[in-house]
Image (cartoon, rainbow, N blue to C red; front, side):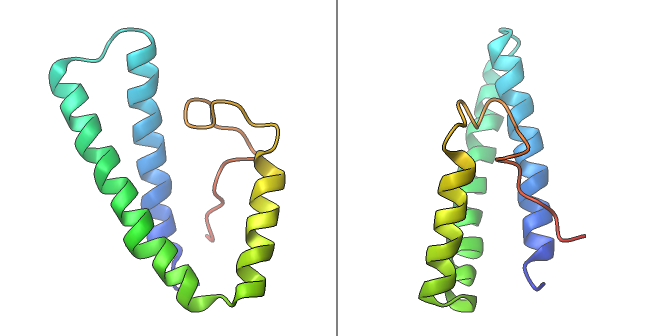
Length: 96
């Protein structure tokens, strides 16, 4: 799949960002760490919006996107704090 490299990058970002959440939860986040976190999160969101989501809209038709949305909604229906606690239902799957 042409988006495999981008998805792998985003998965790595998720791991790093969750590390910041863990450190914040145990009060081990310095001012420098907080700044780094903010920059990394902002860059990550832009990458998802401007690269991944835009390309998915180009590659998939409306029916495929609707089905993906339905499956995502189903997978997340019981998820809580998905940003803080990765779960099998919410973890992106690498194409490797």
